[in-house]
Length: 583
Image 1 (cartoon, rainbow, N blue to C red):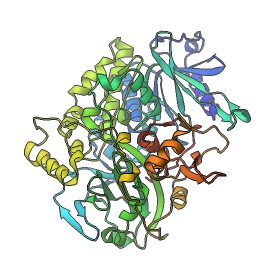
Image 2 (cartoon, rainbow, N blue to C red; image 1 turned 45 degrees about the vertical axis):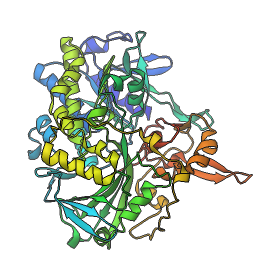
Image 3 (tube, rainbow, N blue to C red; image 1 turned 180 degrees about the vertical axis):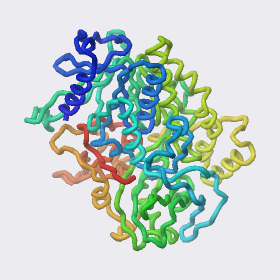
């Protein structure tokens, strides 16, 4: 796979001027303005140099790349930009049937409506249900989706990638950034991709190729929620403490795409629900979005600060589909795709300081999701655009990347998240108080309340011990509306090279059997929506944790929810993981 980067880089070098091609290899520190893609070797790895390296081809990363090139054209400047994507193709790891607010796209590509974009289905109706076991009660909708669109986010980023490439951005799917590169002054100088062709036992297979160093004068991390490199940067540079100060809190979204019967399909119809099947102490809700071509995106979002260790988000989702109002919509249809992903819910209180020496964190890696809207694409894109503008000024005019933080606080992102800051922590008090406080925020204070609520305990600390709860008996799947995990995994197109080192690491291998089983009844086997973690009996009949890393959906729930924070999620070989196509 590394040959693809070399081939693309060679094409780039052929396009450079003779003077640029003849330039000597650059030093490890900052490069001269306008330095194009240049190759040299360092520590046995091939190295490519760019002005800007972006990790992640999601909405934030691609918006940043597009904006950078737009600024270059306007100023007749030349900055080389590359985007790395760990998915096998752009969009392969982007999971969401999405209600899209076009505010940021209107700023980035004002004429997108006149182009062949995948944004075609305007919201036609907007409903909000309170579910009990057998009833769906209609409440006033708080979402205000007028002017928004129901889209496939995967298709959107594919389209954005073509726009970026038309402007001269080099996009490299199938490459997993696994290492942050520093110079002697501990300034970030880029990233390195992981080696490929390494067997489970650590030996090199015939297909071995060393990783590639992508060196940039500025590095932008757009890895999405709980990005592994972003989390290291946030932790090592204490960026959360320098920002808004509170820890991040998360939810797990479990989703399917169905083809439903023609008579039941209403393009642009949007339904959100709260209540059943979740208990009154667990925050979450569901959605049903009617896309085009008879497709329906359906999902359940469960906050990961839930208390009951016996709760299984996957099985709660299957249970949700059995609600009479939902089941009748799905009957006669076909499930065509499945996936899962965590999302940031900390909002305004949890925004880290996004600038580090040598770069910045953008998009959901920093956590700009608007929880009451259940939208983060427009804010992620805008953050990428603001970071791009600061990057351009830094490289061309010599200003500081601090400009990104300053402009972020002046932007509509800051205003929007500040108004929404109290909705998520209101539910720390339970479902009924949370609904009441949310109504107060929306209809009385209108986001201008004189107080700011704090988040509760971090998600992993919120898990109760098993002796405080009774095991939950979930119904068996029927194979028509509800499914077992292997069937769902098949629909996710998840694939990993089997003979590779595991990308899921236990910091202490005895904690699962010594702590998680006796205290929490082995919650790994339930919070993971892909059954990566499975307890099997050893030769003595005692439970032993087995990790089926090949099942991993890259959702990051284990990295967040493990009670003792004993699981470390690292990137597998590039190109591995889910292969989302229609979501």
